[in-house]
Every structure is written in structure tokens, then in C-alpha cells.
Image (cartoon, rainbow, N blue to C red; front, side, top):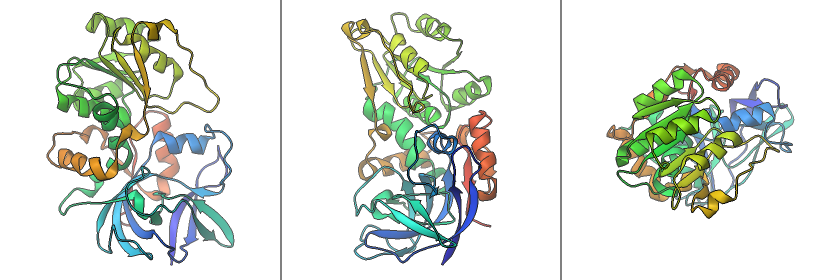
Length: 346
């Protein structure tokens, strides 16, 4: 069986549409028809060569989506043909299969446990979560990364409580999900910071009570006017060390928490004033919002389906697989918060 996929052949070059031969399923592998795939900054960083040397070229990309199980390999017990599933880079229960190799006219193309810029993809069993009937499959495609990371950073990593003040640096896909999750907890004020006015409008739609158009250190000054003494929690999702520093600077002494979510470019470093820690501030990292698929994903699904967790601001125009390079460019230029590939029909 053959399928079409967008392949990264060389960094800083356009992705190439290729017809790949799907190999025989191995133990723990699942063949999925991908319906929708999100496009996030991790793929953008890989495509632009901002993650350092890439030893796996050429390779497939994509790590969040939704789809339908077509076939299962030996010993797979978590899913069965016909199941509708979330596709996620975060590992859950099931067999882990760390690598897949497709054939491209005699050339080997690498893939890990999950790729989603494919019409059909071989995934490891532990990257799938079965969905209930009747859910919006386009909406479910956000769960595997944007929701898991953004909402998870708020609910799991920071453990926010009603009445706490919270700031989100970056109103892209993950940032909007963080704002939407914070809104469900009763955070106030709920502040969004970004360098683009159009993204701040989306932030208001996601639940932000206040927005700050960033102007260097002026952003911290504006936040401190809204939260005298500092915010309780700050979530950074820009991947810019300057914003990470601002996130720590804007939280209160004696218990303020700054969570770094964003991926910086390879080789960049973060310098902070040690006195910030002497004042009792905390700087935390997170791995996918500390979300655990078997514990959290169906909770996110229920919140999304009920309209309690609003990710509608993310839902802009859909892109065809053939338009993947335009989707990456639009993400890079801030024209869309989270491009979504529609792979449900050719």
C-alpha cells in the first residue's frame, strides 16, 4: 500500500510531497488513516533547521492529529480497526515502537513513533487514545499537543486555583489553549501578552480578561500595573529566552510560579538574576504540560465537547496536504495561530 506524505529532505528547504510505500506492520504498530493534523512550532523549528543537527533526514513530520484505525499489528490490544483516535507525541499505555521506515522509490524515509503529515501513517500503539462516538474529529486533533501542552501547563504543571492571577506569554496555539484552560478555573485577572495585535484579539476570544501588546520590558511594567506585587502564575509559550525572563520577572515573590513551555532555538541560553529565586519565585519546566494521555485526554475531550474549554479561536482556515509549505509559512509569519491540515479527502 502506498500513501502520500510531506517529507523533510533538507532543513531550510520546502517539504516535498512523496509517495511512500507502507511496510508490513510490526509488533505494536497501528495503521491509521489521518483525518486532521495540526501544524505546530516544533515542526516549524525542524523544517527551518532551528533544532540543531538532524541525523534522521529524510523524515516525515507531524505529531498531533485525529484519525481512524485501519489495521493493527501483532500484540496490539489498545485499539481495533474502526476506532476513532487521537494521535499524540506524548506516550500513553501500550507498546512503544520508536521507529518506522518507509520506502520512497528505493530511498529510506525515517519516522518515529508518530507522524501526521501523512494521509496514512504507521503509529506506535502508545501514541493513540480511543475517542467516544459523535465527537468533532477536527476539534479532537488539537488534543494531542496544543491542548495537552497548553491546558496541561495550567492544570497540571502550575496547578492553578480559582482566583489566582495568570499571565500567558504568546497567544499562538498552545498559548490560546492555556488561556482557555485558565478561564475554566476562574483565574482573574487573566492576561495575554503577544507582539501581534491580531493574536491578542484571539486571546480575548479564548478568555483573556486583559491583553498586553509586548514592547520589551514594558510588558512587565504593564503586567505589574494589572497585578500589583506580581502575578501568581506565568506561562511562557513563545520559545524566546527574553519572554522566559519576563515570565519570571512578572510573578510575585514568595510563591510566584513561571512555567517555561516554549522551545528555544538550538544554542540559545537563558540568563536570570539568582536573586529571583532568593525571593521565593519558582521556575518550572514541563514535558507536554505533564499530561498523561490515559489520565487526561478524555477529560480534555469532555471539556472540548461541552464547550467548556474553548479552542474555537484556533480554528482558522484548513490547509490541504499540498499546501503544507504555505501552512508553515503562515504559522511562521503569525497569520494563523495553529494551521490544520485536512487529510479527510483528496
